[in-house]
Image: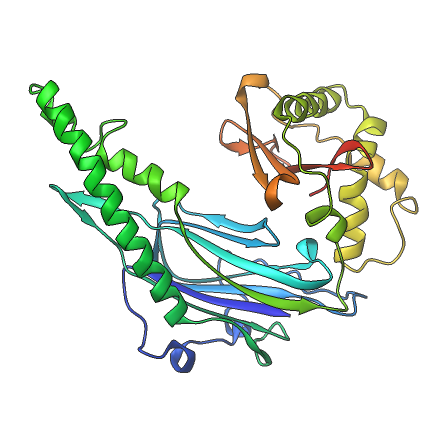
Length: 338
């Protein structure tokens, strides 16, 4: 299964991108940055999405059932590329909601706000190469244009309010006019914060009847609100890694390991490979020089799954590997689930 998306900002695609866009992802398999999990899998159904961009500006987050599949941005410009990712690890039975969230990069020219152009067209297909589109399971350019037009109206109203506050600040600080553009809490800074809180969002839905089902995690797991508990668990993981406690780490990552077998379609189970998993549980060169205050938390899937990072890096990061850490509650206990 493929969900193929075309994203472009700062330029315009053909008037009818459904006719002009190159949907054959196989042509780009060797492109830099492509992540393709196609393998000799025993799964009865596999799901992929691809994203193509000509010129994109802003922060883009793609989610499936509320869990992040791809995050990029911070205002960085992307030109002429394609990425593809497996959707296997985030599937639920029945309807699956695929969503793209865009925080357009805005700039100011005096008191005017500059908006980039956002162009997007996407569709879900029944194979990796995009040759079998599923009727109705698409994100049309008209839908994105409508959502973006509505967003700009809200952005203009917000900008007007920020400018009024800025005028009052100017009057109170006549000798600090040079700070206007980049001042923390100024109009532009406030506009960026507003964009994070009010993104452009478009989505599509597709059915999963034969693929892996992680409904217990993304739809039914308890919603976690106790960030102290999550932070405590993160520190526990750091300490167990520092102590090279393979048994404790194996148990902490039990759901992570088990689900990998499912969404990659691997025969057997984690108990069959227990010793090899124990042997690889410790990252000997992991950077563990951080404290509780360095930990950053972000919730996904309506608070059921929490991403744990530190100082802008992956939680466990070493010269050997990078381990992103997502925590959820399973059978009353916190575990690493992705």
